[in-house]
Length: 94
Image 1 (cartoon, one colour):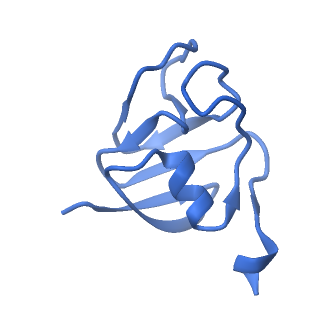
Image 2: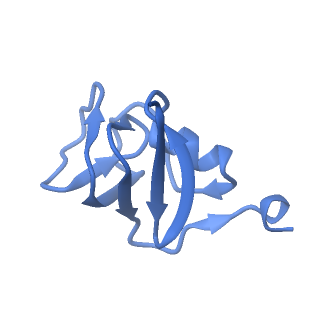
Image 3: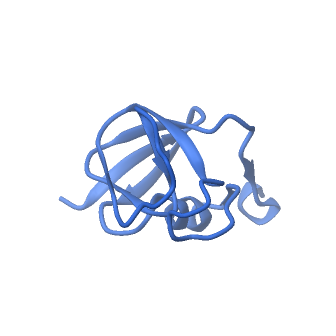
């Protein structure tokens, strides 16, 4: 099954196993921080609290349980946390 659940700073999002986490969050109406979209800068860094992911072509340093959401896809249901309050677009909230 390719559907997964992403829990982002306590908010549940339905996702998949083939798109980068950053793309999935944007499709769900979130506005996470990013700059390069290819695993170089580290601006999209978050913490993996639970679950498994796969990084693709990461050049930035990542520590234990760190995820670059632009270049990682979930392998299982995941729980991630950004150190800042991730915003959701006004369109999605109404």
